[in-house]
Length: 287
Image (tube, rainbow, N blue to C red):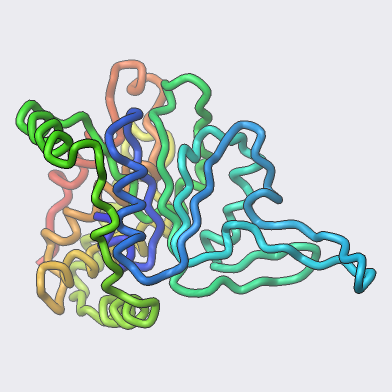
């Protein structure tokens, strides 16, 4: 899923309880790519200037010089993004959407590729905030990381025992350069999608807006996100055309964080993922 987000030139939000390897997964992916990498730990007292940068007075020139913050990189890992308040989150809106930052009237264009990988704990965890809807809409995917099952848990323990406490991350080498990634992103964008499948995407999106169980439906940005994601999945499956299965595969991770369940249904334990599954099953694939 993370690879698909890079191919689609989109950002990913990884959610799971502490200890399920959210951060290490993002770090290992970044290590496999020959791109600039920056990690930002979000905390309740983090300020926007800690992310974007700030103007510092230069005694030699008697002028203010802008000192870039950690956001100026290619792959940004934001750890525990929902531990910072809304004011800090707002600092990410422009750069995530437009790949640029405006500070003191000056515009800074980000070096491409520019991908944000953010981790968060479930909102029920102590010390977390709900991310603003406008920010959630800027993430291509929301990826849920659940607890491992019994067999997976045993495998984790055995691997840790074999490594004797080491991680062996030093063996991971970079395989793709910035230029390689940009070329792949262009190729993915050129994958063919038939007009009837474009309508299929639109039908799914429109149904989220009329569903009585949803307080907020998906925006037009979600339509474009499904289009990009389905092309990425097609490429990963060795095809130069999109199929209905690619769209179905993209729908849940693209939509589950963009729609809001009504308070009544939320109290009953209904999730956005369940409703999206029902919508996918109900929408007929155009022929």
